[in-house]
Length: 87
Image (tube, rainbow, N blue to C red):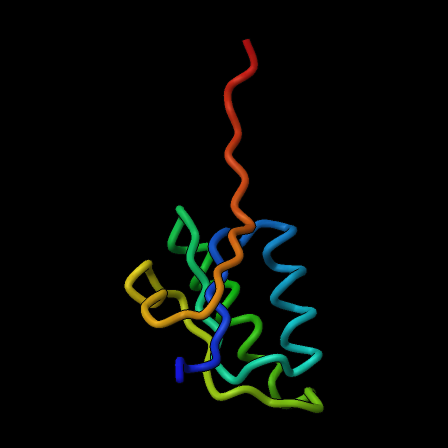
């Protein structure tokens, strides 16, 4: 059976809200954040890790990762939005 984890692609406002909700509900024990800007994913992972002591359902790990972390996932949810320049 595949490991139960959530891999989020896109750490913007919607993605961060999704992870925040998933963490508070204790959906899984492992979270991986992927973003086009690695610093955003790393910063969010650090911020969410800091809140762990106040949670009813603590998780095992949260980290900034890459697409290789998607191996053996049962389902994928992409919350990445791409913008285009206004002409």
